Length: 312
Image (cartoon, rainbow, N blue to C red; front, top):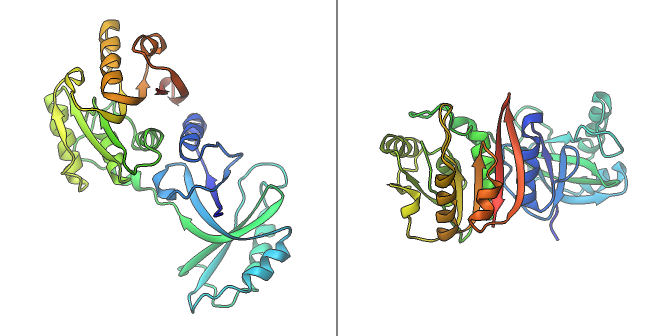
């Protein structure tokens, strides 16, 4: 059985979203700033995963880890060793600076090879979890979504790339064989994040200017083959495994109740599962469309709050 240790991080405003994404990706929220799972996820997929340790050795104490690390054959590669903590209180929590450096020297000093703290060929990490010590090679997360902030077309009320990426993960935690649609895709923020993670997704947009913007943004990041059709989501005839629906809104008007219900009923027709993003209380419309809400979270930015609902 393979085991993986993840370090996580989020702002207070996005804590609920991080936990919801973890439930979708791993089936557990973890604890503090760490998560232990049998699921192997690329840490660059999530805005909340800092790194992954592919656990190779376990021991009851640090000396046991050091003994096992000494058996590694690095084939001439340089290395770096990191003491990892999750910042929480308790025995699995935070180490002070001096303690970290001393533990790193204890492990690294036993390993065969050349240490390189600046540009190592391989990075190893060790951590304490559940009263045991874990050691393995690190896969570092890359903030891919930050590159997507620099897009040709922008819209003030669009989801941030961080939120869009997390929502795409919640909707499609395992992309293999899953067909997804964003039927109110706007300028394509969710589409770009989903495509960058290998998710099979198409878009639809009723506003011609926004649809053009979505195509331009997708092409800019190399996803110009993504299908974006023009039209009302209520006219969709194809069926999909999941839909990501960011309900349209603006600061001057509110979507009429009848239109909300009609949109959700159409989503119920063409998708088995829907991840809904809304700034209003739409629970009664979700129920009226024949969905059950199986998970939810709130994401705030100042006084502005979005709700993310998983509906089945």
